[in-house]
Image (cartoon, rainbow, N blue to C red; front, side, top):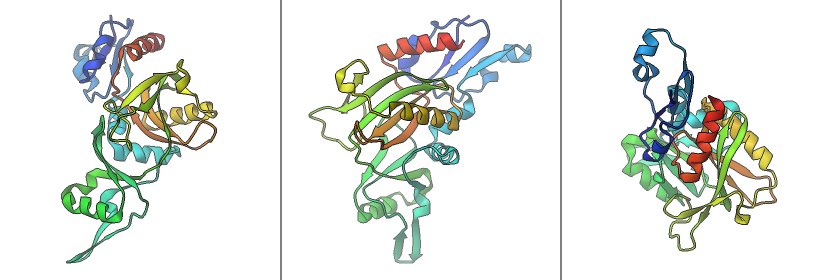
Length: 261
């Protein structure tokens, strides 16, 4: 039998019917479908069922508020943050007060992904305007300190470490430069000299493993920003339980999943 791949992401289609297993196994890429809905007969018969990325883990990772709370509990090296509604207070009928004082900042919707639902805020006035425009949903946003670090890497992680990685580099003609995503960046493989592995790579990997475990995932893609090659400053941005999978990424996932099952 094959591992059941549960994902709404079409880039995961090439994983289907590729990983052999001798025990009923589900691998979730962000899916919140319950195991009993995937293997109803197996549950009824009391068969052994293996999960790679539980529903709870995908929920923890997919909700940025919960993810940050998991990071804090585990002591993961991440950016300063707050739930936006807790930073905005109506002092009286005509006056509102902001407790947040770190600028520039990033605002993220709790379920944002692929560069959507993310906003760059430079000043207190800009933040106040955002809050006034979104007053009813502020509890669904987090605000983070923005770091002007020059590098960003994506590490694909299990409890044993990093099995695949790339560097995200801005395109020369990218208009938006405060946030790296598929539309304004290119992916640099580790073999490419431009990857330029940071001097403290082992420390970064260890912190990524800690972050992955903190949300409960078995496999995750983590975005990490690094100040420069020769400094030890880095920040874990987030875990991704449903990353987009290109051709080379898919090959590495098939190899890794075959090892796990």
